[in-house]
Length: 103
Image (cartoon, rainbow, N blue to C red):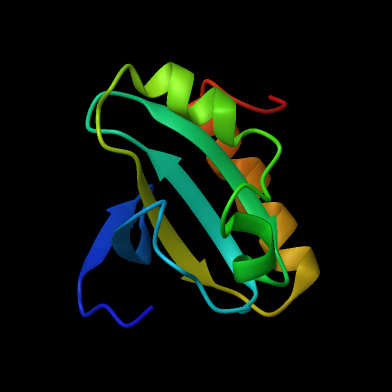
């Protein structure tokens, strides 16, 4: 998951982007799933690899459907504190209004 690139989303510096078919390691943080046209999802996890790799994420079919054939990207913000992850996830969900998941 090495990547020197960064993406600024709502003032946070995320690592990425990576395609969603990338194999991720188990690290804690907040992730944003998006295309060049839409914010698809925002989530938090203590193990990114277990959450995203393969078909583990229950909303992955929704991402693909809503992407409308555009490439799907993942940006990641490493955060170890569960409380901080949930706070940032909620803030980003309100700001980005992603097409998938709870608002």
